[in-house]
Length: 284
Image (cartoon, rainbow, N blue to C red; front, side, top):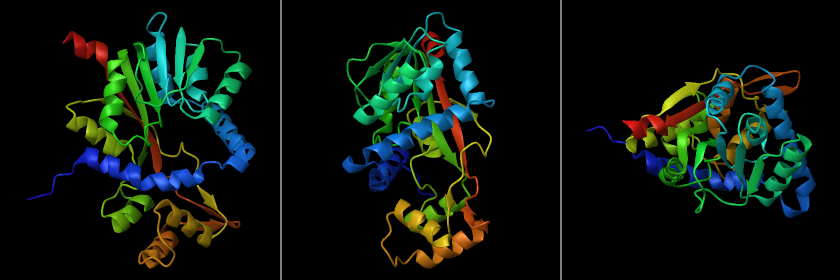
């Protein structure tokens, strides 16, 4: 009999596995300026990306614009790229962000952009005592939540019209999938669209999906193959001289090419927009 995947357990397991990696990437107390610069760079990169056509962004804006005086809950607002952008299409944005450093940058970006209808709240989602909004948005902000069902359930309860969730969607046959298959016995290197969508199906939900074209995400670059290997070793939490090292080095040689002294990784990521309409469901 074929083994049935418990998707909600797999999601929780992947969050736990990736926790140490992402914690290492966060700024230290004595490196605050560098962290702030990197966060602002990310905000500017999103703005540059949105200078080009973006089907998912335009769809979300069209939905919000269709409701008079719409209110939007931005969950895990980060540096505020979405909050600032959507503020021009909504009556009010409530930006929830648990990181004090992120909130500082978020408020600076709101001020610099001349936006006056964004309220910033210090909470970690799922959060109590949040009033109902017309729309809710979680853009790549769910990866640290072990209980995806609770995250989605809380979004649904405080939303009148539509919930939007943006998630990374890696290639099923790409480098990271093959590496994860060898190291962890399944092809998912982190919490992502594929796992989340199956969790939602397990919940009895049948959400809509808009998938972006591949190539929108910036590619990783490394100075040589050794640096590329260290990137993967850190991502999977492997010890030095791991039993998987020969396989991973061979996989790197197969997938990566060096040009002009730079290793450029292949484009393996898309963003999947998952959305579910509450007005339709509640009228049926």
